Length: 66
Image: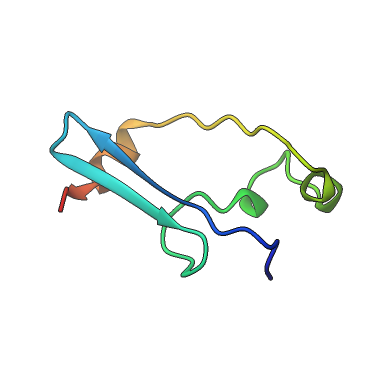
């Protein structure tokens, strides 16, 4: 499924541990379709905002930054 854009993000905790997300390769945990407030109509909008809360579990799963 492509929306015409490809995004990636790296979240760094203390510049030591990182979580990486790449939309195009489906690497990471930030697939908005997995969240309760996702709807196909939301994505059809030109712009939308989603809020995400990082937990201790995310920190525990983070890998050393490359």
